[in-house]
Amino acid sequence: MPRLPTQPPIPAARPQGAATGAWLAAWLAAVVYATLYPWSGWRTPGRWMFSFLSEPWPRWWTGFDVAVNVLAYLPIGLLLSAWLARRLSLSMGLAAALATIAAAGLSLTLECAQALLPARVPSRMDLLANAAGGALGALVAAWIGRRRIEQWPQWARETLPLAPHSTPGLLLLCAWLVAQFYPQPLVFATGDLVSLEATTPGEPAHPWLSAWLLPHELEPFAEAAGVSMTVLAIGLIAHDLLRAGARGAAAAVAAPIVAAFAIKSTASAAYLGHANALAWLNAGAQGGLLAGIVALLLLGWVGRRARLWLAIAALAAATLLFNLAPPNAYYLSMRMSWGGGAWTNFHGLLRALASAWPFAAIAWCAWRLRTRARRGL
Image: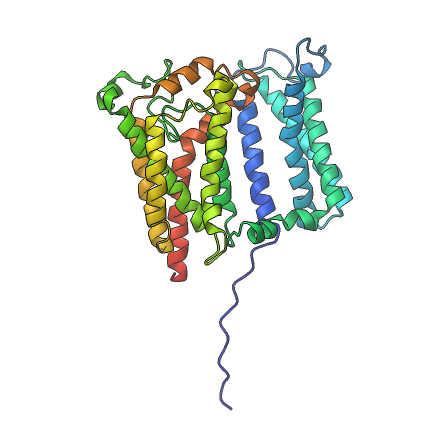
């Protein structure tokens, strides 16, 4: 009897809760980093690490601080409830209870760890606000159910329209948008390492690096080139996350650039006044945005592999320019107004995102190229 041809194995489906786990891990990393920033000066505590639990209530606090602490832990309770319910096959009620306890335990651990850092002060009010946020998120999860939480990636793909396995890339774009709140030497200047440890804004951390900086008269041209290549790279990455032949691709590619425009204007208005909302949009930024959009229209629709290689080249060139070009006047004025204020807890997180983002994006594009090569695409 002739042997029937065997069917090729069907690739294993992506676990339904994988996207939930990825977003949970990213949010947990952000909360831990922001809570323990600046991660330096670790010391032996001069008192019992739990003594803050019995101290008097702080005399000075704001509703904004409490709201931020609640909102920071709300996604933890929400996502952790869904993740525990799937991983441990629990009911949503029990998973929500465990998520609430875990969120409170995480907050207690981090508050105790702050006793080891001279720049941080553990607070019972922060602990209670964090626990309340985790409990609120767990209650929301129990109310809407695990399946609805896990189905958000499918809803996003149908609405946006995203391709499978696009969650890490979407996280990258969200991180880039968040990084735009941080004052940058030039517009969209992520990956700044030269002035990362500088004590004076706009000056390199080491004097010998000054010899490598471009002259100040070239700053507008360097900014325009860096902005244009960043816009091109962001558009190419956004396009790579879309399904082939998806409708509304142009709007989806333009969305992160439009969102960055709004974030830059909002941050400028918050620190320099409403009259200066567009102070960041100087001649170099305007020329760079226009050139980047034109380049995206011309090159944005090439093949996927060429698109990823172009994104890598654009990110590498823009990062090099941003490190060699002197800062613009807008950055210097922003740094004078940037005292942290209500955003003190996020200062380190924003700085880390702005510094590390292009390198993570290059790694993501390289991983996508390797994955497509394995599939023969």
